[in-house]
Length: 150
Length: 150
DNA sequence: TGATTCATGTCAGCATTCTGACATACATTG
DNA sequence: CAATGTATGTCAGAATGCTGACATGAATCA
Image (tube, rainbow over all chains, first blue to last red):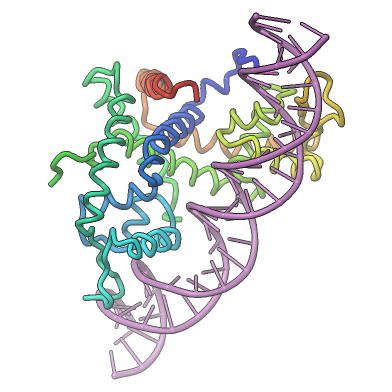
């Protein structure tokens, strides 16, 4: 279990993956007692901030396929946290909304998730936080630039 | 718009997840033509830099469970990219090593992955890169601090 | 108008990863 | 030396997410 210096530890990509993994674990840990997964929470949070999002839009916002999001939405609908109209008001997109029950469920989760984010930002100055924000956005933009929309 | 929740537009956690997602997609895109997944590549890269790592150690390094890594290792062994001794030299841990075939396979993948990392870092100064490195390490440390050794 | 293109919702099958569990090997401790 | 704790490899089953595919609605264009 020796962690002797190998410069896999100097890769920003590896570090980014590690940070994301640790963040996800921390979120899962606080969400599990609430019977909620990270994707589950992401979906509710997206709907709270942008009511009426369609299944495909929610999928993009939660970084999963629309097929995966659809499975989740059906569960959330069945359990009464989310409602979707039977027919599309326009096109095929069905605008989803939180029910009061969904909003209550989200409130507890938000408290838990916020505590994780606060912990993550502990020891960072405001300048460092805005710097991190800018740098992450730069990485995203650069990676997407060469994607050719694939 | 956002009363007391985690504002997705300004959340560093959300941005971290997005960056990680985009990076993973970009890596998958360049690795797919080589018939290799990200975890697949991670395993080979870890073994190249730290020969003799056990299944459990590889799992921790690739941020998956040891059960998942074991499935992958069995495949890599069957396909001749990795070798493990039949019996453990000490304890139960079986030190894994790359075969020449595995090393050749990794070489092509490394070129592809490096191109993604270069693209990701495009437009960032050296100071920004070291800043990003320090900030990500800070996030990881802070999150792990409250994890109770998990 | 009719054809094409694009985004969407959804079904089916498959792949990957996870949780749970068990036996084994070593280290620590009384 | 025996009991306990920790780490490991592995099997089994379940959950989750993905790819492929199809039909539908709307916008665009010849």
